[in-house]
Length: 231
Image (cartoon, rainbow, N blue to C red; front, side, top):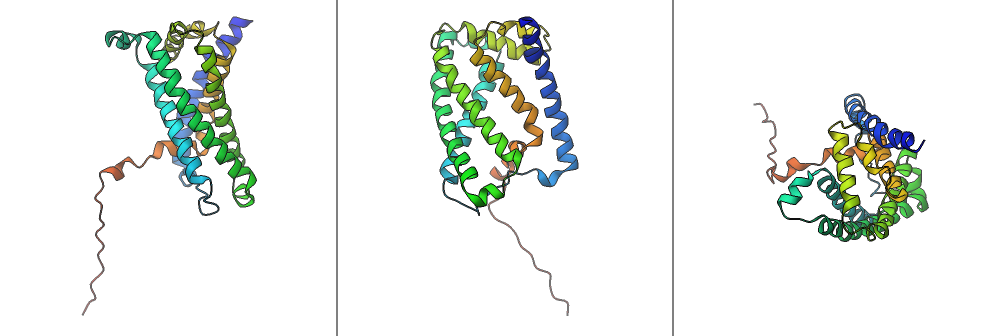
């Protein structure tokens, strides 16, 4: 039973979530583009928004790219660079811990603002409320893995997670076996992360894919022309 549940949650569920992520995101952009937005409520109440938003986004961005690089970079790359597994794990604990604390403080401020300000609460949808609470729980679970990681500084478990994540993207259908004996707190963190991917197309998280990078090289001026009056 343990092997079956582990395979179902960490061997099958990720592909369902990733397929939903890709197909759902494309369909939403094509069929309902006017909902593709972050839905800012700054005009309703600015207090708490700036500091909460900055801390939350900064923390989440650092964590996202840290996980992306740390888990999906082939192990031989770190070995070739002379980066030991124990050093990499300690770096992940320190950097991830700082980013996680910043992110959860920001998320707490945003949740307080969303639920305790009448105007913001009235303008919020169920999906808005749900996703910020889920992200808060995910950040809390991530921070809760730190004490467990400190007991395994040799990096062995971290290598198992790397093999698992890379196995998912290389269609290794036995990838889930790498984490079958992982600590429950890690499994809860990973299962909720997969669920966030599943929910991604149906929430405001889609605005992550619309980062206005082109504004970095757009000219800083605009040319405005008026129609000449005819004689």
